[in-house]
Length: 358
Image 1: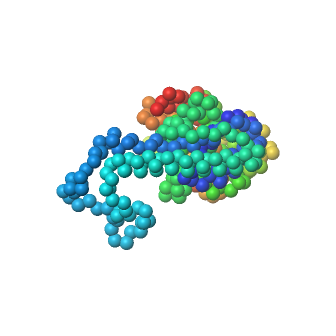
Image 2 (image 1 turned 120 degrees about the vertical axis):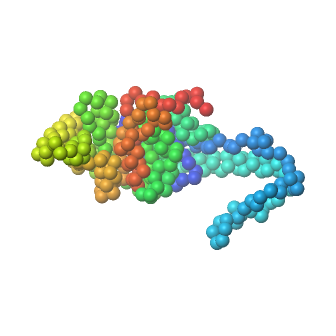
Image 3 (image 1 turned 60 degrees about the vertical axis):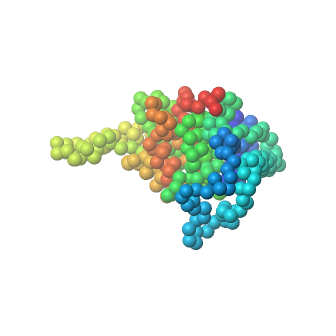
């Protein structure tokens, strides 16, 4: 697979990057791609002076109402977070000096961990460009993509990964909505071997953007399946528009509704066959699912039932909506699955983030 030529790897010292490391090695060694590893660090907070904090006397610090500085009862917290440590005897200047020291320590620690990641890549024969960038992470990542023409972003999913809480944190979700190139969010703890890949395809006759996006999804999923000798599954969900309303009206017979269902299913089956015929799949022998129902729920159920390691799916923006919604199906899937996801944008997608944005 040599689709990706200029990969941006997002390093985050706060997450477990082993799965990210393994996938980067797997892809880059076989893909002969240029690689940049970048650490995107949150902007440092404004100085206390800018926040209007001034030196206060001990008497002036007394509040007119009680300020609670400890958690109640038996709630466990680490000693470092409890109050009662250093007195503010030195005033604001001491706080500012301490803040600067903390910021410098954070920079040094981030740099040390980034260098460890780079060193590990070099030991397996991969020599990336590295950099540290300060700012709002998702904006700086997209700016880097635009300025350096990256064609893939690889990032560790930073959420909890439980079914009650999305695996994908704010930065990842912003990227999946707004980054112009594919975004590969890798689940922490994922094994080196990607055993099963699911391609989620959305078919519609006459929708050129959706057809092009579906072909891109298939190209990526089939290429990765061959690269890793993984099982390939393909899912397309269909439904009869307005079926529940039709059944609720007395004027439409069940026979008519059932005939409409058969015609709709036949049309989607034909579209799916035409799609599959465009790709050489004999060596992959994929499992192909044409399922009736809501796509988000069906994809999630199949992911769980078949122990999917990676979903390849499209994200469709909604013009005119603030924040560029990721699309109902993708949004539902991303908030329920516990596996890695590679998302793809429609051709010609324009990010709301600009190269000169700060």
